[in-house]
Image (cartoon, rainbow over all chains, first blue to last red; front, side):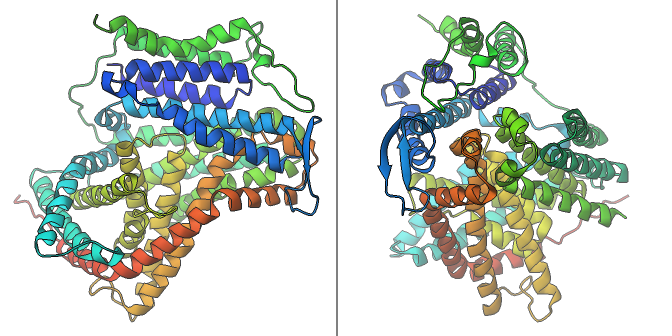
Amino acid sequence: MLDVRAWLLWALTVLVAASSCRNPLYVVLLLLIVALTDVSFSAEKERRGFPSLFRFAALAVPLSAAFNALTVHFGETVLFRLPGWLPLLGGRVTLEALVFGLMNGLVVTLIFGGFSVFNRVTPVHDLVRLAPQAFHEAGVVVSIALTFIPETNRSLNRIREAQAVRGHRVRGLRDWLPIVVPLLVSGLERSMGLAEAMVARGYGAVSDRSHPLRLQLLLAGGLLALLSGWLGWLFFPGPTPLALSVLAAGVCLVVGAVWLAGKEVPRTRYRSRRWRIRDTLVALGSVLTLAAVQLPIPMIGRDTLYHSPYPRLSLPSFHPLMALLLLGLLVPAAVAIRRRPR
Amino acid sequence: MRRVISIAIYALCAAIGLLAFLYPFLLPSTPKAPTAMAHSQDAPLTTAALVGLSVTALLVELQGQAISAKTVAMLGVLVAITSVLRFIEVVVPLPGGVSLVFAPILLCGYVFGARFGFLMGAFTLLASGLVTGGVGPWLPYQMFAAGWMGLSAGWLGGIALVRGKSSHRVRGLGRRELTLLSVFGFGWGLLFGAIMNVYFWPFATGPANQAWSAGASLGEALARYGAFYLATSLGWDVARAVGNVALILLLGAPTVRALARFRLRFHFEVHPRA
């Protein structure tokens, strides 16, 4: 219903917001937003089961909390002590470390949740269409793979039935051999036919040539800039802007190389999706949230995003304007509710 | 000239990957630790973006050498077969981190060469991620690791060819090659887990300043990583490595024989009448 690009922006915003936010209040707010979006986009019959978000949280949160509490011996509220002879675990176990671990688990759950919504609502073939021009071949390969997956599944079942009729039963790993090899051979046989058909229809008749040298040079230069910029940022105490601009130059070079590679052979796209008003709304909401968490805008309480439980646990602060801006991620759910038939 | 640049691109991608792998340990010992602390919340994202860019660059470079219709078709179908194997493992839970996708990637890379191996690894993880709903910030890392798995298997195959005696590209695997490949598969099983951990590690530890404020050194960071590794993934990784070995030993020889036969058959050429 929404454009894939709008969804992608939404999912990336969830990712960025989740990883730049360590305030439990905001994280819970974001989790609620994601859960609401999840519910409003799932079909009627899916809605009854226990949402996968909670199942994931039930695993990730306790694990993360336990790990952090047991290995970080920092903070002032001591819960209990482990004997000192235990390597790494020995020492005091503090409430602060436990809370910090809980936070980490919630953040990981948030990231997982955002992308699981994204995975569920976007049709796979629309995602493949997102591939930039330069990756036309990659897009074709992935499209072929996606088209052949159901076929391969059927073929697998056919082979298993055929072998079962002959009295073959799968007991151990070794018994998969008479199934896997025919599957492979029949698949390769089909790919042979496909390749012949593609060649016969002139696939690759024009584009069968390698990239010009300057493209390779651009790529190599871009990677070199990325690497040196990153190294500089990490290791040299000098001015950060220099390293960051080298990094940015590297990004530009690589992106430019991709763009150039796409320009080499013109290709036509059919049936491109229309970008609608609701897509614009979703994008605007995401951009709003993205700006709120990333740009140094005064007066919106950006410093409340990060709350450290160390050295002594305290109540996290809350800024209503920031919370309001995070609600930009709620636009997809709002759009869905508005369009639901009565 | 082209070859030199090509090698430079490989090397730079590998270096970026290595840095992505090591930076959580290097960060505390860098001179800017206190200022970097402010940025460290964004560090996992930056790393994911950099790894993504290097995968992109490598893909462009590998694609540039013209993918023919034959390669596209074969790659597509092989990726489909391997993705179905991943589908099986989602439906039927296998013990630990055993995964059926890695052995085919290794074997295909071994038979068809480094370039095909990289594309096979990266696309398999991409396509199966799309199908099983596994798209997320972890995808660049998975594509990176699986791609390099296939790439290095291709180099291994190339070395085996140059060293003479073997002719696996025509006849199939000998016993020595099978042993070599299973050792290789074991190593990659562990390495894949280690690479994927590095993606998860910054999230699990948080913005790392808790370790710094406690006055942690490189050694302590490593010890903590070791504990994290033991606690969360060593079992899975060993299971995955053993699974790779079992699959390669069992299915390696017949699979390679089939692949090698098709490799020969795919050498058809079209001569359009002028």
